[in-house]
Image (cartoon, rainbow, N blue to C red; front, side):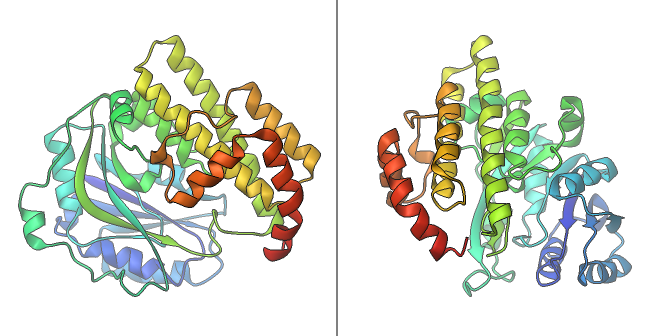
Length: 347
């Protein structure tokens, strides 16, 4: 089997059909790929919806498990997958039609450990993004440009590498050889997973095909504003920032491509920036905020002196990042805006 698509499912009854339908609108033979749906203890009708697909499609399988979170579900999918390549697709996202064959063909032909491709975000209220949106058929049949094959380190140094696991496919044997797993119980689990995966890869390339759509929803991990969730997200951001320090130290010790280290350092500081933005809106007090900033200073993740524009979208974030570079100025902003932002966001 050429490809396994791992789809974790938890209470996504509104969107899971769109996700699965997108996988059935492909020009790859049914026998060449499987869809491994991991039902992570859904309490809505998600399981029943998926079950209907399983009864109609021989290459869709359903695995039930008690709720353990996204990392647990993805790890379960890895254990069950039989394909030569793996792809992680979130159940509220979808793939554009007739993309998978081109992606798998390019991966196999070039014996790649990782192949990345294009992804764009959308909101459910955006009528211009639909499953029926199709890529120009000529673009599928003709040669789509593929980038130079590089080691993972050199790829990270030369390209705008993304850490979301739905922006690439992975050779199954290569993943197994790395012993990497998603860490249970944490948000942003794909950031350290993808970073370590790329660093271990020997053959990485990028296919310039527009293939994936990422749905932005109000209650998602990144947009949920409940105080407990909000503070856990900040804690897990800090955890990843500290973890990056271990990665950077190892790369420095091994005299890795300095542009690769620079890229990872920028990604680390972008997480510092976004954690500072979230702290402004959190229930944390100024003493806790100062403690966290001191911890970031101790490992060189603050001040924000290694940021690359590749890690920011929009002029607004770049202006705010400049303002946040001064520690005392940030504390002033916190004292002024934290009470206002907590009220506005009902925190």
